[in-house]
Amino acid sequence: MSVFEELGLRRYLNAEDTYTSNGASCMPPEVYRAMEEISSAWVDLEDMQRKVGQALAQCTRNEAAYVTAGAASALTLCAAAAITQGDREAFLSLPDASRCPRDEVMVLAPQRNAYMRSIAASGAKLRWAGEPGTPLSLQVLEAAFTPRTAAVCYFVFHGASLCPSLEDVLLAARSRNVPVFVDAAAQLPPAENLWRFTEMGAALALFSGGKGLAGPQDSGLAVGEKLWVQRLQELGAPHEGLCRGSKVTRETLAGLYAAVKLFLSVPETQRLASLLEKCQLAQASMERCGFTDIRLLRKGPAGQDSPRVLGRPAGIGAQALRQALREDGLLVGYDAEENVLSFHPQMLTLAQTQEACRMLEYRILRGEET
Image 1 (spheres, helix red, strand yellow):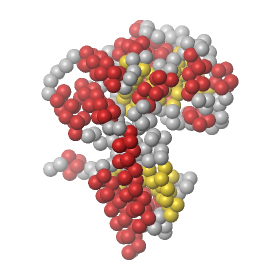
Image 2 (cartoon, rainbow, N blue to C red; image 1 turned 45 degrees about the vertical axis):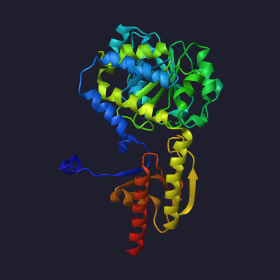
Image 3 (tube, rainbow, N blue to C red; image 1 turned 135 degrees about the vertical axis):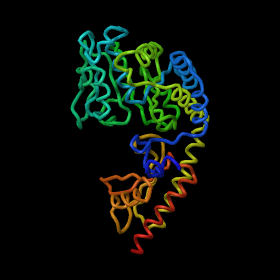
Image 4 (cartoon, rainbow, N blue to C red; image 1 turned 180 degrees about the vertical axis):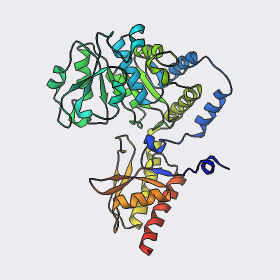
């Protein structure tokens, strides 16, 4: 009996996105093999973390790299490193940050999102620049810095259109000797993002390991300056303190290493061609089902370079169809503002995309018959 049968779990095909709630990505065989190999022996975990980091730094064109327990965990660890500035005793006192002379992490109010709680979990005080939903000027941003500002966290996707450019934020922070941590959790592909933000001057760029990289879902990757990676190494698990609960196993380390290598081995032109082929299947399926306003978008739901197809079903609301498809075992996206479905094949193989299209057509035809 399979674990699905034992636990009564439902299988889904994921044409929505790499959301954590959907289980993010499915790992390729190369990742499983690396995890299985390392699981059969014991290692010095700190030594493995260092060596995996060195290897990942080299292949991502960065000074240093560190594997975290997810991108949200990386935010907590980065904030802790920023406000404690290498002071071990101050770190051990967190989330009580009273020992920290610089205890603020600046966040841009238009970028406000749930993941900012991960920053606050460190004990850092959130220093807001601007107002939520309101365009943030560079002048207001610069006025928000105080002598207690230890770092700036910039989110590539959330609210970035209302904020000064990352280049301007980096310049403003650099003039005050304040590091900038860039949250780019879902911004893969393209692969160049693994080094683009740090080449621009970010102290660290943070990525989810279980989304575009198709590594273990409980992994994250921080890349950037050696000084800041060293601080993450000194503070993160298995050391005692605030981040002890964010353990990274040897299996996760090996799996993410294999996933990054595999991700970087695929040329962007090949990756895009594969995605477009799957999108063409979805587009043709929507046309056969009588969808209207069918169009191809070059960006995924989180702004990654991953094309998807939008369309408006005829004779049934998009939300109702989405729920019906979920009951059939197919996950698709839904845009409430436009009342359209989103078919995003980033996590699907070609065969799975074909099966997802059959499920869509079957559901529409079944609806017509009833």
